Amino acid sequence: MGNHWFVIRFEVPSDLSDTASRIAAGRAAVNGVYNRDALDWMGGVARVAPLLPSRWLQWSFRLFAASHDFVISNMPGPRTTLQVAGTDVDQVYGIAPTLGAAVTATTVSYRDTCHVLLNVDPAVVDDTAFFRDCLCNGLFEVTSGA
Image (cartoon, rainbow, N blue to C red; front, top):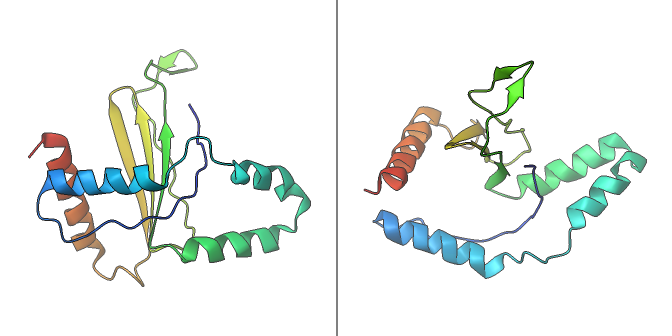
């Protein structure tokens, strides 16, 4: 359980008509750039961050994030039931921080459920309701096997 930082940049085609092709293209793009043994430079940044001026760190991170259209953070959670004060936890949500990208998404899995939380910049995505509907329809299409 936890958030492991890998910053990778890749492109995926947006004009594929069927779900299987879109998933295959996304998987191929990620596999083409992801390296499990890559240098954990974000871990190094996290260790020196307390020594840096917070305003500079915030500014530089926002500048970096703003150069991306879409930022996603995946937090795999436990498959077993968590408890707080002896009570079972039904759902776990993440927080999609406002990083300066057009869309920032955080996915958090817990047992058999994955929640997707979004921060959308309305200056970039002017019809957020349409965006929400497209995202929900796409997730339904992928998860239903349509």
